[in-house]
Length: 483
Image (cartoon, rainbow, N blue to C red; front, top):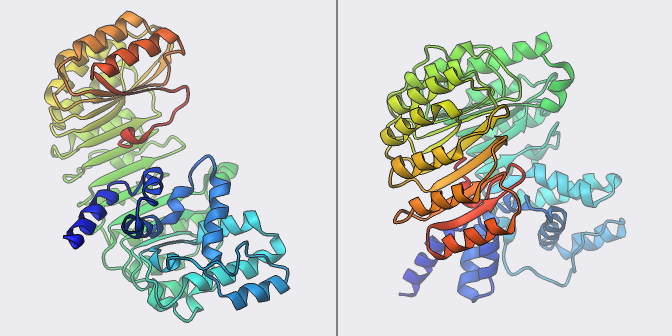
């Protein structure tokens, strides 16, 4: 029974693996809970640094890491003027380093640079890198900093630590020797995240790709900080991108996820016949002609920023009803284009669960057909961007309450128009939602009027609204992670 209890607790805590606040609050309940939660937190401790109090959390994390250094090393370092910020008599309760499966050298690099003087950072990094690369640890994920040149592949236990790496993230200007050394060790990469620079990209990346047998996920991310200075590529960089993209074609039969922040030079996407997720996260506008007449029969998730509606409409029409999530951002929709893409979705995506899309006033009736045809919808993120006329929210709310499938309960509205929220309109929406699943509702613009707060409180107490958020800026909370 004791073993069963631990297993059940582990499964419960795993559900909160991305909720560090909840996990931290459970740590002090008893020893058993602590022993279960600590390995969950330390599998990837770096992901919890994205908070408002990030700097304080970084220093605390560094303090825990350096507490595992030997007393002799800490004493010698103190003599060299390096303070590892830890009490040498305080021994850690867990082998925290041994629990890590994600080695984020980029974050370690950033933390050390923020805490130590520049003249001492190299020594500190070397000791901490050696602390992680040991005989008791095997990593599945590795993240390397920009222009990384630390010879970690030469550390005595490097081959054992990195032989099972499945996720590999680096900049394309990584040091030649480091890349060659890791290429010889890392032969089980399934996910590759590559940051492409304007110049000085390392062609050894091609060897790293060719050395893999089961690449499932590729992310090609442009360093826009440098790219924006030139808005283009040198001939050398264009040649690198051609070679890089061509090497990916050799893995077309295994790649299931592809993300890019620029339009490919080679028409590689058409080769990814088993693609399940396509993420076109661009900061510049391209023609994307390479997507025209493209058929991706297994595509489940489509995310696109600044991609022409005409192209996306064609892509959706050429799917086989497999799409479950569509997110379309940062592209102008006139009324005709908006109608066409809504029609393409309700005719070709019967299994759709989540949708983010601009909606025009004139197409609310067409949108109702989408609600009727897409009976598996769970979440809607509606973008209203009509600065010329007020959007008819009352009509939209009537359509939502009249025709939404039973499983739809997550709503988010981002409104940039002359639309004025009326208390009566919101009240009517809530009244008509009775006897349905309690909604999660988020607006980016409703005003800070007390009567709205009172109204929401009433409908929360009646179980019609489960959560409500009124945001002035574009961000989401946990229940809207699907967007």
